[in-house]
Image (cartoon, rainbow, N blue to C red):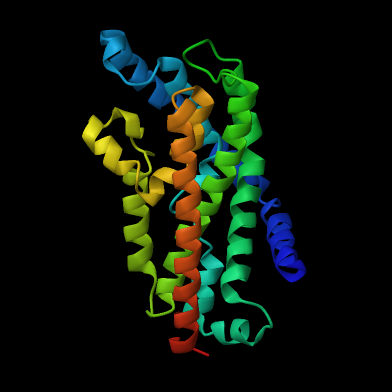
Length: 267
């Protein structure tokens, strides 16, 4: 465990150095957040009762999504891992006394965490001072906030576990571009990153809530805003944990098979 923590710490420290990139990202995310909330306000003014979430909960969802984009951005892969597979440096990784799955998992978590640390606080602070219905309010209760933190942690691990399936699939191919593009396209729609899942028709929403992408940001963001509570909240969190276990097990098997059959390209 100590060696994997070393990989985690090294990647975290390295990621914290990219402050200029984080600043540029924050500007983009502020603009995008204001634009989304303005669009939702236009719809809510027409008929507030016609929508499944309150405007306050929707605003909280949008700002948390922007602040924690690095946690759940489907396109944020570790480029070095793809380069390792395609360049032939995978041979060096296989010589190390570590499990590739565990090492890549630790690196991926640290990379996303470092990006989020640099970006999230300024966005959350500004959003907290915006007027009601436009900004980020407090969670409905201390218990809900604790559930939010737990769900957020599990959601991040689910995101990384899904990434690991893409890395594992690339061990069987020469290029990972196809798997990466397909994964990113599916994720944005199925995770509620384009439209929050409660805005889908009820039957469609019930189906989408069972997919692994819905166990990422969808659950913690809705818990924070009060849209998920009680039995529905517990059910959603249980689904998160189940998907985490299933995806990690599947990723381990895929990587183990890929290590045995991998063809070293290049070197």
